Length: 377
Ligand SMILES: Cc1ncc(COP(=O)(O)O)c(C=O)c1O
Image (cartoon, rainbow, N blue to C red; front, side):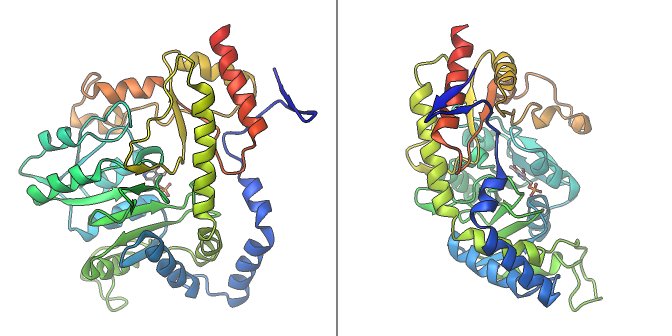
């Protein structure tokens, strides 16, 4: 099948195409990288601090600390709060593995609360039911670019004296009741993995916070925990943001709002055109500004549709096929199928369609026609 528009025939659509963004700002990015090469200041060069300041101001937080990845952002956030052996951290089982991995890597136990089947985000009422004497923190994940219900989560946290770390890896540019993702909890964690809404050219991450004490701690922990250098009162990691990545991200940050607007427009186009079909389009809560890192539909015959789209050269993917409570390496937690029914169902029925700022209407039409074709055959 094909979609012909202006005599151009579309026969394939990638899930994401990073080359288009690179080409649109090639000179700017090449020159930023060249500046770092000339300076040879690869480790914590001045661009890192410059980007941290710009990012804190973008998120409306007092501080931002550049780190090596979203995974290390979570690890450092947990370490800075002193969470470790014997502690419990409540999170969602419907997330990328890194959220849970970070909890385990500080020695704490992940405790799962199931999701809302409409937004795919953690359910605050189930968080409340999962609190024990050992609970120290909650990590809501703003999945696919839509914030979890932060007011309720923050209220529960306050009532129970718990800390909140927002896993905003997929939500840079998203807003909840006018507040930026990553600015509402004690700490916000971001990823600049290349395919993210704000993507580097390698790994990178950021932790945001308002507390000066936490900012100082994370700065220290990201350089092995030494203060002064070579004197270690605490164990840290090598978790700095790379200067080349910072120089690239400074240039890209200025485009972020425009890119998120475009993602929202592309998402609305899909939603409008797919609404009559036997599938569920993403639900955006009225108080949220969705950043549409991913455009995820829900369909009973998910695997059949995925095969059909792939046969038509359309990139699509499942985020995430294995609920985290059922991961093999977490078998010791003793979970079984049926423990988190909404997550387990979502893992079987959800599918991400191609969405990125540069995707064309013709490409979207090809995807839409292909989805329609699946339902009519
Ligand atoms: C929800 C979530 N948390 C954490 C991470 C980890 O980020 P990174 O890949 O930068 O380590 C990701 C990355 O995909 C993510 O999607």
